[in-house]
Image 1: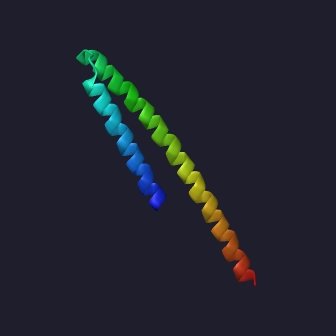
Image 2: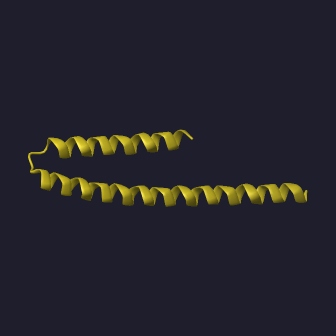
Image 3: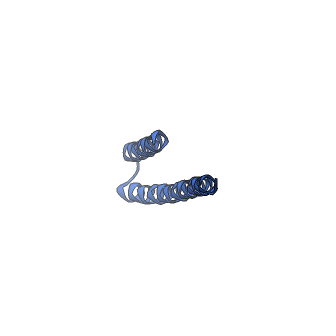
Length: 75
């Protein structure tokens, strides 16, 4: 659970940094909106990949636990 909190904190930090950087950049509103849209797309893709990684890890651990329980029950 601590790893999950760390990951969430890292994501929030990245988002805050990107937003601060984009908002303080000397660009027009149209360019800024385009940058925000692009960054949002990138962050969405990264979050989706992370979700798949976490899901795979959970499935793997669940399978390990299931195997251990089955072995224990056979004894």
